[in-house]
Image (cartoon, rainbow, N blue to C red; front, side):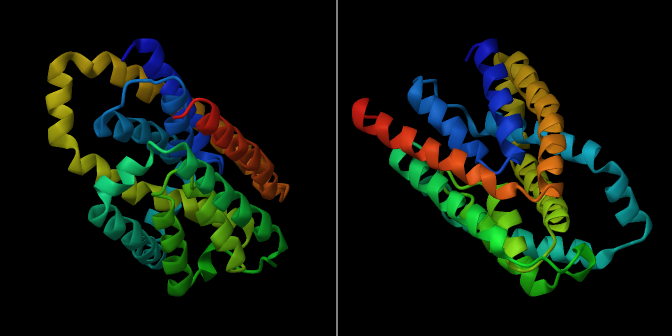
Length: 257
């Protein structure tokens, strides 16, 4: 991998991780399209660590407020919502990784996300983040587990599923990105041994530039999505995803990839 490729992949990760258009789907799309070398799981985790740092900085006041006021109920809800993705990710890790080689599956994932983004516009929003129930948290967690599949957006499905549970868009947005913290931290901890091995092989420069790029673009994406959520125009991303699904299917047919 070149420095340019690591920066490009970091850029894609930072832009698409928070926008409801599937970061993993876009990374897999460009890797299939340009036949980029398959990236290690460690590099993928580090790209996510860059966007994790963006979350910690963007929501720093809210996170400090949670710790100061000891809002343990919210922490419990985040734990409940984290369980499905952790469970299914552990059981089906190999099959999930293999599925990203298929542009057809990526296209289906884009369409699946687009459907949920669109129907969420019709749900009446009543509850704020303090009123999220354990059943709400579990259903949002199931949505996050589905986002392990190619082309399915984690932010798109968790936010739209929360809205469908009558949670206000701003609260859904906040809960979705708080939920990303434990699952990313867990993945980083599990990959520490592999990370130390790959750094010793001279991969540090590529990892550094990719992670830095995903962090900087992640901050910008969070600000942009926050403005979209406030305007209640979240569903417009479904149009983009439908277009991307069409592109994937056309490329799959013409390039036979």
